[in-house]
Image 1 (tube, rainbow, N blue to C red):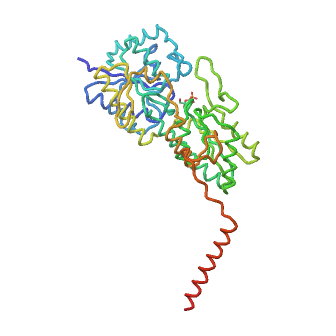
Image 2 (spheres, rainbow, N blue to C red):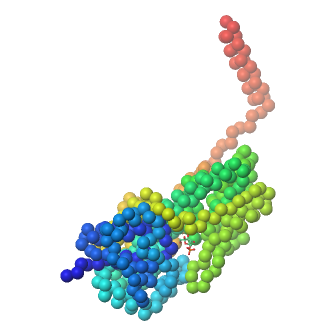
Length: 402
Ligand code: F6P
């Protein structure tokens, strides 16, 4: 009798850690007596033409630390179940029929779908059609609800942090304002975390409305304290003060965000007459090796996804609810976007350090705690102080002579 089989696919935009999930799932499957097949190019490999390769511990050796995905991926393609954040699009019934046939003919007991919100929305529709699926949350944006972290996010933050470290030294040397645009779609997680870990001075995110006045106020405040350079981190999905996103509209696909960095940089330069440069990090954030955190998370996700299949808990997605890996219905993860809490502890801590979110003047008190300003010294105080210092000096001189 042939062995039982598990299918795996990676869908949507790639990110560091996909291979670590594949390896984790394959090794676990084999330990449990399952064979594995990997479908190529995301959901596309499931039907017309069916394209897959056999996955073994041997041919997945050495991929733990590799970026990208050995299975390839497709963003949208024929399997698009959403357009925007949650606008559901029904999958073509013929496609669904084809997928069912493939799953049956190959004897797949369960399919591990590794993807972000759009890809998991496809998995949800598969589940509704009794195709046995489980989900693994992937995206550098970290915007899936029901999980504290998606794998790929930490690697993207590390990339943005490295960029800020580098911008820091050149900004300081040239006394310039540097604007760094990072990814994240409609969530400010990458900008917030990289901004904190890379010592950004201004962080602009979609969740906090901001103004050019307050951004410039912060830059001038730093200037008045002798700091002639400023690092501004802006999320691609931050809204402009006058309203609206900077994006390219695409038909039948999500809008392509990007370009706000240049606009912010130009406006700061126009208002302050200070040299301002913009750097767009782009897909560097999605490439390369996963961080250790992402390797650990992705490996656990791979192993637990297989466990869900063995336990026949189809329609569920593995998730990280620290300190444990848990699972939730996929529908819970795709139904709404997880954004930064503007009053959350990370934002509060950043503000306490003096970071500006461009929404209030630079000299606000940390945690809203009123700080008593030191009393202003009167002329009389100054005179008394001078007398006291003189007395001390005279006493010291006398002691030295005696
Ligand atoms: O969702 C991940 C992400 O990298 C976003 O941060 C970014 O807006 C988008 O994908 C870019 O997509 P594409 O690779 O299609 O340009």
